[in-house]
Image (cartoon, rainbow, N blue to C red; front, side):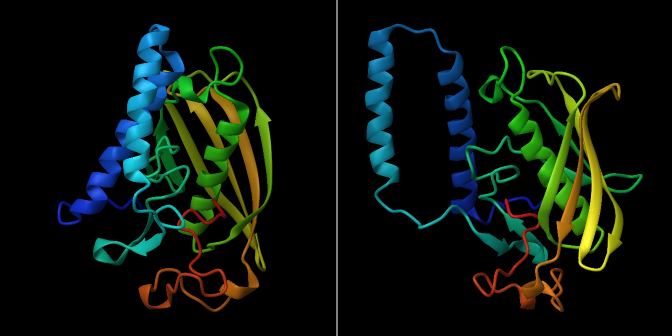
Length: 228
């Protein structure tokens, strides 16, 4: 379900390492209490580094692609993308009892209310998990509606578990339920999503690499089954 970057893909591996270091930089910037002189010095260094990275640019982040073994991956995804500094990144696996599962530890960077995770961050992660659950069930599709129920505050800095499962289908529509919970199972956020298969995707098999033609009428469908 997740696709690793192999040692043979040295350029992508280096990009993923850069993204991880950038996450650590972002975390440090969110909680640093160094003095003004040091802040200005670090800012000057970052300005120079930014200019170096901008020397050669793509139009978009890392795109959908066929990785080693013929699996589809999206290293630029905002939730799971190892090459996207904004992504936590969330690693999603198939759950033994069905559906999908991910272990998550949010960071201070995700703060909304003081000391707690922003509700929009929780919704983003659940949107992705629900979409992945319907995709794994064979219904790659796009989010139509997402209903979120906030049961309790979501802490950062503590291990949490997110799960989702496909529930039913009707024509081009599919539904899934999901949640974020403490490690002991206490629910914090619950979600229900309605997903719709775009007409342009009908008759195509997202598991067939030969049909994955980026830019062709919205194809390929995202591996997470949504428009993230």
